[in-house]
Length: 387
Image (tube, rainbow, N blue to C red):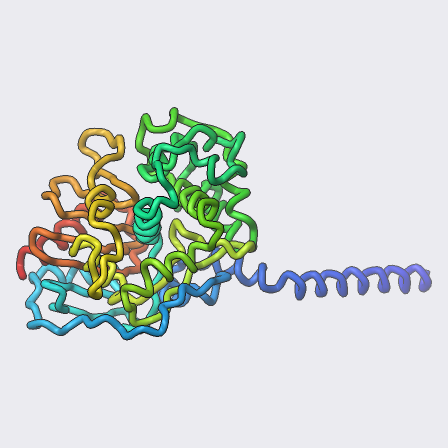
């Protein structure tokens, strides 16, 4: 009996040691998964959104050693009275308003500061579109109607087989992808766990097999389309997105702080939503597009690409917010009014009519509630028209 107990105890201790060893070996993965599962908790979301590098693998986007491009201080603006309540209700963390390239308003909230590098979420899509525009201009990618499998052969036989670069730019791939952030088992949340656990996003995209529509027929917001766009760019250039974005967009703009991307386990940038930078630097991107791609005394993004990418070219249904090449065109917008947009309240709003750029970061857990998006747009328009 005692011998059996000793054998059983030794077996238990061996299992315990192996479990502890496995726990230590996988500690980083476990910590990242726990961080992801609490990323949007009410008591953590604000700080998490300013420190995403604590929860994920990351890659720098070098800003270079050039001087910081100036953002002159203009006359302080008295914003419309409803803005104060909006800031509180929508959990705004950073708000920068430019007019004529000058800062008319800047402030930070909920314990955050100007130096925080905040998560872009889907505003990153607009940065990737700008990068693609430079590759189209120099002929690296000659034809947007080329099938994505030409540059990303891993997608052959997947739901993306037959889709063109233009289709994924327009979010019209037809691929089935559940974008419900509130459903733990949705595709978007499964993808988030792949990133957290160090999996491969390229393979995740290649494993998608179902289409709801033929490519180009119907607009449906499918974030993985943007990852496919990144695969195309990497396939066409043989280079990483952080290096390309640094060389062609970030360094010429003269940002204040070095951005970084969240990455998957292969070091591939999470291009559909993983860019992190200061709110003032998001405003610089908006100012570059307000100036038709010219910023810091350079033509960074081709003028014709700015016009083409911010035009409502996607096959959206009547009454929907319109969509271009990874840029949004609000309902009722005049020509030259468009925006980059990310979940939980991230915006770069560009208004060429009033010469205004509004950069917003937030931790708005109620961003999907009815009327919130329209309410944000009303605030942006009120600010722009008040200056």
